[in-house]
Length: 519
Image 1 (cartoon, rainbow, N blue to C red):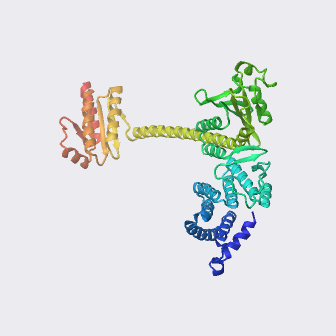
Image 2 (image 1 turned 90 degrees about the vertical axis):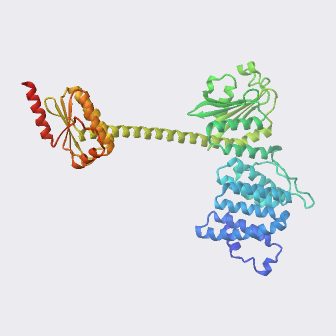
Image 3 (image 1 turned 120 degrees about the horizontal axis):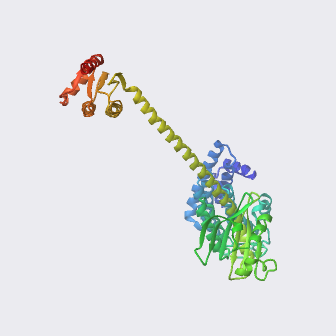
């Protein structure tokens, strides 16, 4: 891959506008392959170098798009592939994926095997960078096959050295002779020892699986894909967690296709070959039973004797070398339903299935952490609010204390702004205290209040009236001139209300009245 840096520097420094170069028949190829080299070199380039390379790529792409409008059969695929690479470098994943596919299809239609192969390789590396291993394997296998068909043996060896785990190893087609026609357009299969793999189905299934991270929806989509593509009439997904196997979802074409179950322990089920599942979960090997009734290892199993299934397939789900579960498939109607091609397709999908399940489990854990943290925050908020309410009640009690200043005489000094809410609190607390103590007088001292609003003034009058209804007498003392003006301007009915200039005067009045009453 380091060669891209060298080629990119050459492509950047060369000036294709020189007449001898501009008129060269290979000029379009120079713009395309030079542009590809520049985009590949962007991955490891510094930000400054990346910007200048992208500017050159944009200029090359504009030329290719202009030429492709005139000669789409020859140049459209190159414009699309370079556009895909540019979108990849810019981080537009969706646009890059779509344009790779469009460019590959256009190259196939025009019979440009070398560019179709390059497009598949570039697309494979794009998906591999995104962690979509199954999709990358399909594209890279197709690229390997096309390079073989074109006769690019050195490129094939490079891929085999660099990405051996992503390639099917088997008999490859011979290169086409010059007189041979290109392969027909449409979906092709990858051949591994004579096994035809439907890559279109694999890609479609893998993309559907990789696009889902919500666990219930993923399990449902996964089982539908298995039932549609693997030749099974019944499918179960078994997850391994802490050395325990549990069935997470199952589907049956003869019933409701997919049912998500709540982690049913495998040991609690008798409607499948439990021993086979345990073997696959231990060994990590796929096992195919062509005809369970006639199979020497399976025929004596109680499940086989009772239900008489035909074809059975159990395959491991591997993630980073660890067995994360087992896919269990059955076909009760047809023997040997799980052909080599279907087993290979399942193996192809298994890695993407493992990645998607792992992502879904991680997503579940994150959601659980979010729910727990939200609950903690809500509890903390509720506690703070409760403390706040208690503090406010304490502050109100301290700001308007009710004091018994003499036998049968209560006083409540009010300090600060007296608003509607505070006046209502005073009424409630004072009336309760009068009832509890049997007080005859309640002195409301407004010496510390500079102003009241209309509603509060009305409340003061109501407090005094309410005190009288309890058989006591309410006396307002220390009225500030501003408060007096407000009460008069509102035309409040203060008939019969007793006021005194100071709290001392009111207390003396109460003491005199009580003394006269004792005589």
